[in-house]
Length: 359
Figure 1: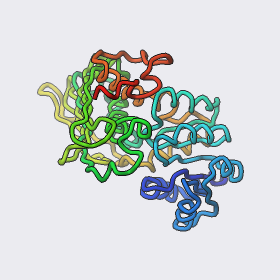
Figure 2: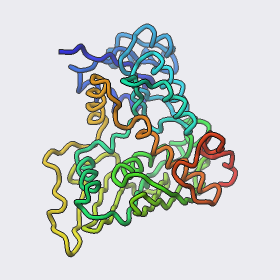
Figure 3: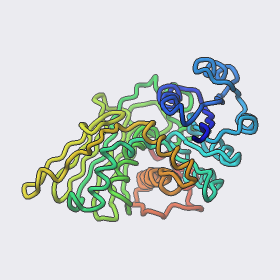
Figure 4: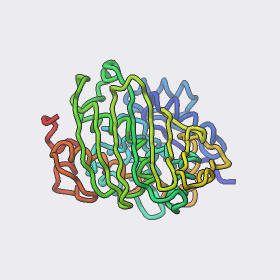
């Protein structure tokens, strides 16, 4: 039996406590969390004590050199991700990085430049695409078993009050990168892309309607896909009745998912078209809810095999590119094509492209 993988956690905040550590503990025979790095020595020590970790530090470079982890889980605020991911890859460790992956496409390309064939690789936490029903839906749509996709709706309508934005890094272009599309809706948009494939064109609007923040608090977009399907996308932090929702109308029926922060098979419904069989959609026999754990299981297998994990490289970049295109479209009033935002484009360097005053 292989020795457990050595894991270091960077950032001991809420997501590390409620999602990362429980997932690692459920795979205790395969991995061992041996270190935590946090913003201060005091915070790191408190996290280490609460979880019984043998090593804690406020110095990432020093911890990487001393502990030599196999995997580094990045759970820090978004503005720190790029430098921390790059440092972990340089040390030879694989990375599992929380969303949003970083603040811009330029940062993403720079931080993943340290990947090498066979590893290390940097995977992004996009757990919504790894539940059993999402995997099943992707297979049925991609093979045409549900007919041609026509129309879709992707909705992340959540509520975040002013106290939520009192956290110093939230609601700021320089530290969060963007508004609810970046911090909240990125998961559902990643799942939409997982189900519908490559997008080709975006038109969008964004606004700051209620919160006293630098970024927007609502974005809406129209997205065209390579298949010809068209989708509406809504992301906001102003919705008292909260829901995460995806609806896809296909030739043989309507597939829908409604949940909030995670789903099981029962959260998916299918309405067959009049001409189609009700058995066009049969839920998978296995009911695996979306979670950090289900993505982590695959990542561990990929690490041991030395193969690129899902939600890394271009696969981990595509949601960030879509959001960047949404902001460019919203702030310029022009449609944006897939692949057009690259070096030399101001939106490659930042989500607002120097035009945040236009909100």
